[in-house]
Length: 495
Image (cartoon, rainbow, N blue to C red; front, side, top):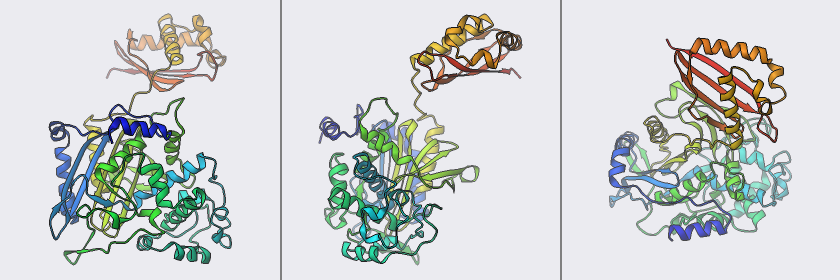
């Protein structure tokens, strides 16, 4: 499918606005210049972690700008990993399940505060206090079930129904603590099926995989074409041994998706296209952004990679994605995957339009550290930076008024652009005294730099002055015409 044709399908399904280039690799020269050192880091990690094969990639502004395949997908034949080698992505599947639940919510077919038993009546005797949101955010009170849950992957639907009728013990009271549950996401898969009146896998394929052109992605691993599957291996007793190939079953919603580097890049591109937010946009962009909203509990995590000792993450589990604010990358979304025979990780920096991912074929060999280290290195090199926020007409008008206040030495002439609290919080006379003190401390200032918007109604600026610099912020009031409610100024003298 061509990019133009794919965009037409996405728009027809009220998906996302298509970027100019949805999916294209960069030139070999650009890859070598920007990514060769990172490729070497991944290769080193592979060797140390005893990983037979790996593929990793970077998506930027809707384009797959780098993809590197390493090692072998099958040890007996030594067939190499390629961009079209299929890996099981384990718990990174949960994002597809989370999106599917939110899409049903946005279609008016369920609410996140609905009791689970409303849609899965088999749970009525024991799950009365659990909501769909509890399952989504891992606050249902179930015990953390790695690696037990992984081995339930092929469980037949009829056996899962019996499990739901019997119930499971609680680790904590529902709604009181974050505790990761594969069982909970398998239960979400049953809700997707019951509400949509479709098989879970068929629903995801119809609403996501096919529209996004993810032709090589599927839930049934046995349907992967011959010679395309990365066989899963365990490293034990200083040797690799093959893991059993588990077919798709009732726990597929928590970790069963099989995909390729080329295909998964399209999913990353789809997610990133939801940022920045626009005033008028199709619903699915809002659905994607809702995947970052946690309804549960904040919890602390060590930052992955080399910066782990210098930074802690305060994270919250959204809908198949973990949201956090990182000391290096800013706002991030991420998720890992571990499975018998496979390990994976994905990391999004939405404000920069950048995503990274890596897939491997060794049991629980999650490439979390090299993914975060690669993102950190790319950020510090200046390869990507947060997108600047557009300066709104209202903010531009207010900034012009702030410049005139500085030049005139007082706010008296700018009353139409000042909110009613402005001179109540500091009188005209005191503003004149304050501005005169700043001017005397800094000397003449160059007010030509544009303001940097932090929102439609707020921004910050920095002016170079004869004896230092002037840092300032503007905050507008919630009024129809632009009016400054707060103007803060700080003098920073030369050393």
